[in-house]
Figure (cartoon, rainbow over the protein chains, first blue to last red):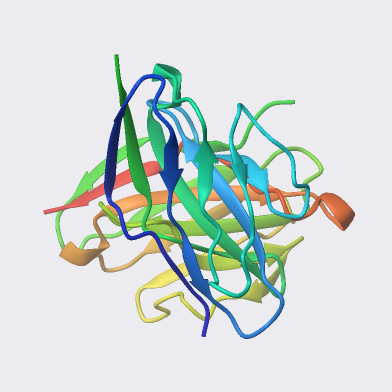
Length: 108
Length: 115
């Protein structure tokens, strides 16, 4: 069975500090992982996809198959990064399994 | 492009009553999803449609939940009768076919409160 775990419900950092939102997964197949974000009063939207290996809004995420992790990182947090972040795993049939989410608060 | 539309945005009902939610996906998106998001949790997939056919409904509590997408466009999700534990945000999402099918576009959700 597939599972996505985000161990932190809340992460609070100061502006300019590094950020790491943790995500661990369990999946028997070859995983395809994503980070989705929901800003206040906005819809859930895709932030990045591990296959693309892009940096979006300064965020990066590397898939570590040995540790079954897909942590989201940003070297210098901005106040506008405050949001709910969800790690998600894509399984056969384009179906997503989401983690429980982490609320990131960036303080001025 | 216009986003995924959902209505109503909020609904309060008493337990054992019925309720229906409506979703209009992005034009041209063949795949439509319904998710349930309970407070403090991530979205959980209830049902996935490809055009007007069901791809997966393994997580749908079929004794009380039903969903349809008759013409392969709009979809409705119904709960009958509702229970207290059905209080949640119900999210609709849609995606394209083909190589871009991995990205799901979400609607604003319907917040259901069952009292």
